[in-house]
Length: 357
Image 1 (cartoon, rainbow, N blue to C red):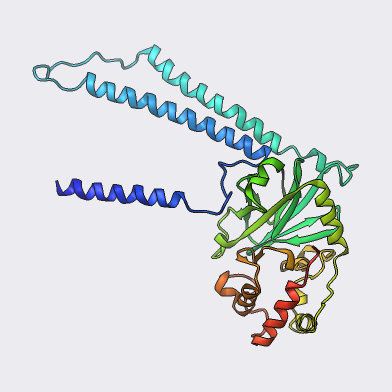
Image 2 (cartoon, rainbow, N blue to C red):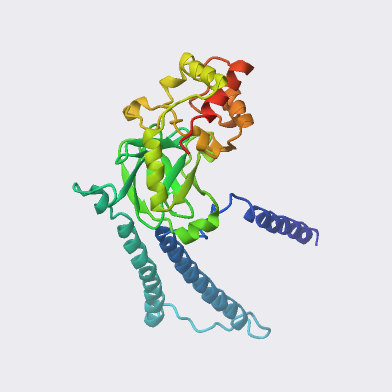
């Protein structure tokens, strides 16, 4: 009796924990709320596989209990042996053919969707025009994301801006270790490798994206180090006209401090060699191997600091004071001298003044 009570308590604790954890997570960080064509296809396949598994489990469960009841040991029939069906050709054909049919039902849409997702011919067309197919080069690093728009010759980090209701094509690569690009509500995931590029496309439906608020959420889905869980990015999907306006602003963006404190921060940015790693204009034409840190050209417009903290002056100061505390193992730690309170204030003012909006 005591054993049953212990088991019941553990089961109750497990169920309660599962219910609590089911409510955890960021808004719209879910594959169950598809916001694009790819996500909808993946959701459909997931539901199809779930239905197949539920039906199989239900049928097996019914047969299991039927056998337990039908062939249970009865008083007076201890010596009775039920009819044996071993070697029954008809039964063996049935339980061989049924799984094959179920696998085919699942395999056909999976293979079709896989080939469709890998169809990136429009982005590889040599005569392609920028308005025909938007291409974004995604580069993953420990622990940040870079997004390059080669047709527009601009680069941003941590925030991915895309147009709605059209296919966006991605070139994926990693600069250090393997990462994985994943926007749960839009589709994916796809690995980023150091020696080869992966290519695929996503769409962002305007009517569904609007329900998510200002941003969708992206994650690294490949364990890459101590701050893997903090390697986030945000996706802002906007109408094509608004996207075009944003790219024009990015092209013409320049670092122009407005106040004495911002000018002091700009000078410190140079003196402390921050400029050696971070670019402060979106039109960064340096090769990838030189771009070893996030582009800060539109830092003041971003909603997050380092992809994880709300973009406030206080959080910028916290990050500059001790980046290791908020992202262990990040490559910024130890690369600049210890900053005084006044220097942090000046750098904060300068960085938040880097805006294009």
